[in-house]
Length: 61
Image (cartoon, rainbow, N blue to C red; front, top):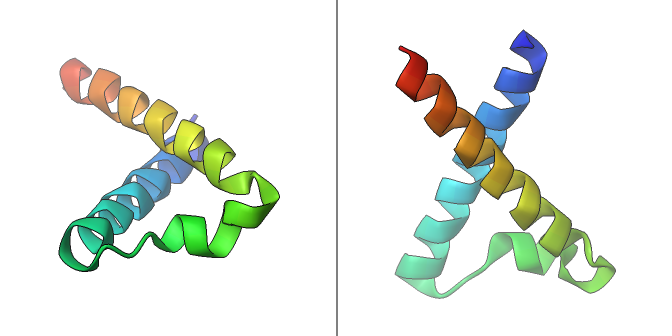
């Protein structure tokens, strides 16, 4: 479970940085790197699930 939490934390950070780039520069790094392969959508889903996991774990503390 610790490994899953670490992966989720990395994905939350990636998502936050990507939204920061979108907000500041209108540049979507995830879409630029993974968009053509359909991997961007999978990445967005994983980031969203990671956010839910972080929220659940935050509520436990």
